[in-house]
Length: 361
Image (spheres, rainbow, N blue to C red):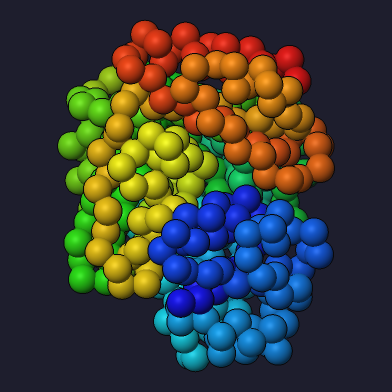
């Protein structure tokens, strides 16, 4: 079976690696000749709007999925008229626009920060009066890893941020002084069978995820699963969905969702009975879902900008190194390491060693 993948980055690569033992091959469409997924499957080089390439993908693949949100909607519509596309393009249309995403959360009774659409300077002034300061001004689309957003503390911040971002539709959100950041990785198949991985606690630096730790039995699990299930059922979702939350006190506040496999679920590769990547492929191809329980205490550290020495990483007990084959660049995710340990204390010790290696690379 061939699964078409829009995008050829590290998430696509990890999907392909998970598919190989199942007899699933991945065919990637990506405009970059040296896309890192090319080592794990066949690459169709072409723009995401290239109709000939899209038609080739639809003709050769049994189903098409995507590894990132910024796929042109017209491209997915063209594909969907010829081949099954999962998750459904309507989920992507919501997730790629922060305004539509927040509106959906609110419509489903999922708490969010206060938010207002901003198209003009007057909108920004009215929004700040309603939301208060500090606030966060964001582009509605094309933002990820902290890009396309500015925190506003005073009038000067607001002026500078609007000047920098005003070429795109914007959204102003209230700033959440959170206790911690968590995410939930969920998967739903074509028949509606739904599984959840343990809630994951995340640490970001400069808007980029640097560490995730699985939290089986976390007291916020039921609340997170309830909110995620509302989204899955409303969207008729098929595949892996990640929902990111802020926790404040005993409440979860939805930040955003990602209709794809997700960085905060990388620990599942070695840390869970079935990885998020394998379960995504199972879901979109009609195979039964695998168990999502953790095999041990598990977590993940991202390598951003540069990789540390492999020998130093693998000297940490329980460490499993994943190198993406991408050229080093400030702010760029070039690899990660998952770690499994017999208990929480051992896991925290290993993660501290790995985080130190990441910081010194």
